Image (cartoon, rainbow over all chains, first blue to last red; front, side, top):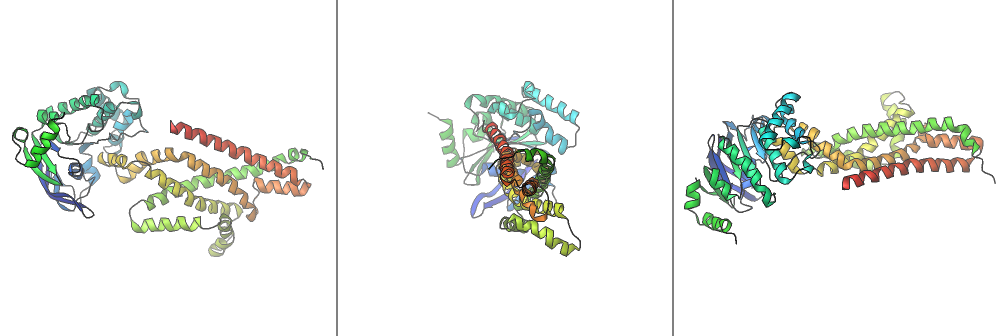
Length: 243
Length: 217
């Protein structure tokens, strides 16, 4: 479903992604982890073309992301994305946030969009917040709305860029629960996160990045049980053994 | 010396006509200026070097010219080029619009830049095009952030409409001057003019301050 082949990216002189390759099959959940600055957010933003890359190829459902004839808006509308800072539109209500792209990109009517929004809000447990503005919601609620906004376009895959990193600890679970449910329903997911509990529970594979390289790309059990590289071992021991 | 404010009452219809022209010019030039300014700001931020340079040249050019000179051009030079007179009203309106656009575009550019890049990414990620992202996500937020500054610039524009006397238009200031000369009541009329400008502009600034407080919350 999502294929990355030998992707290289530079920010001017800085080599942020080095020869990155991995595959995410349909229905697979892949967690991308690694120290901050390792390039994981940049990598996931390359998948839907929010970040350009200079070498290699990324295809989603057979469509080349960097291809000259690729219509990026069309491709993006088929890939949902959830951001670290939610990025709900503050000047619109929750419902309008979820309806905008349905109407403007998919060309759905207002009523159909609103019904879809309401179904999804019910699913993430926020049907009573539909008329509010994002500023009136907690972080956890905002992130659940953001997930609903992405799902409203019936995506073939979902990208999560550190979806819980900006949340207060007591709100992390409400977001993770929605994501677990999504994974169990068979959604193809690429998730950049430090939530190792989530990775253990639902990920099929874990990709570990450091200094712009994919250092390890392993089945979840294998990754947590016996990581091959020293860097992955060090990383795991640091984040699994908090004081 | 005695003051005779009765002269104002007699001249009131004439003065209100002038005030109407001042308002009309302000509103038309501000609206047109803002539309042109959005285009200039988007050109400046487009990332295309040529568009950006054209916009920058435009802004720098008009900001380096006295407004009164721009009004003169459209009154005297443009008719030479197109072969017929433009008329006082249109030359003033075009001059104000083009001139204000330069100032507005800098305000709008800052307003667009005040919207976080994450918002743009969120729009793109749902498949919206550049134009849709600007129209539905960035510009509404940018305008909300910059309404107070735009209004302040509008107040300045209202004051600047007094310059149209140079093309023989009867705005409020010109009407006041005509009455003052005809009736020989310079002091009364100019005190009155000052009071009117003060009340209108001060009320405008109070409104701007209230908007800013509302935003600050």
